[in-house]
Image (tube, rainbow, N blue to C red; front, side):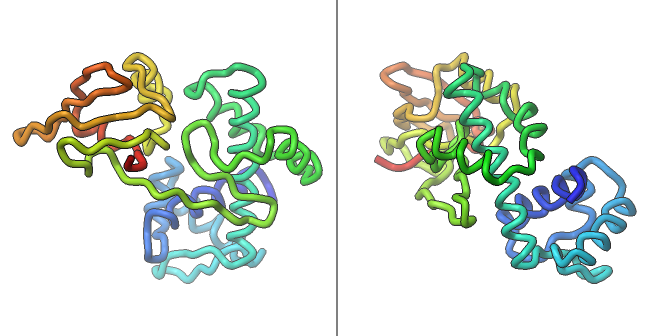
Length: 217
C-alpha cells in the first residue's frame, strides 16, 4: 500500500469505532481535509485491493482484510508513540506527528521487536489501546469525566482530544494518565465541574470534561 492508502484505511478505521453504520465519503473527506471526489477515487482503489466494501451512495466499510491492515497501521503508530515518550523523553503532546511518519515503516519484524523491547504495552501515551500482532485489543472500561456525578471519582485513563493544545492544557493543570479526579460539584448553568486532582482543587469546563476518559474507583 502507498502512504496515502494507509492513511485512508486508518481514517476509516477510526471513524468506524465511533459509528455503527457505514462511513460516508463526506465524513472521510472532512476528517482528512480533502474533497469528496478524491475520497471516491481512493475508495475505488481500496475496493479493488479487497480492503473496503464500497458502493456508490451507500458508504464504505472495512473488509476483514482491511480491518487487520488498519489495525497494523494503528499498532505501529501507537508503539512508536510509546517509544518516543518512554525511551526518548518526548512529551505526549509532541509524538503524534512524528508517529504519523514512522507508522509507514513496512518491516513487521522491526515492529514486533519494538513491541517486545517496550514490554508489550497495551496502551499508548494517550490511553488508546494498542493492537497486538494478531490485531487483538485489550478493552478498558472507561467513561467520560463529564458523565460522572457529584462525589464520584475516577482515574484518568485516556483523552478523547489528542491535539497538542489540549495535552499542553492538561500539563498546565497537572492532569495526566493515572491522575485521580474527584467531582466536588457540577454547575447546572454550564455543566462546568469543580474537581479535585490529586488533592488540588480546579474548575474545568464541560468541554474539557467531555474529552477526558476515566475509570471509576
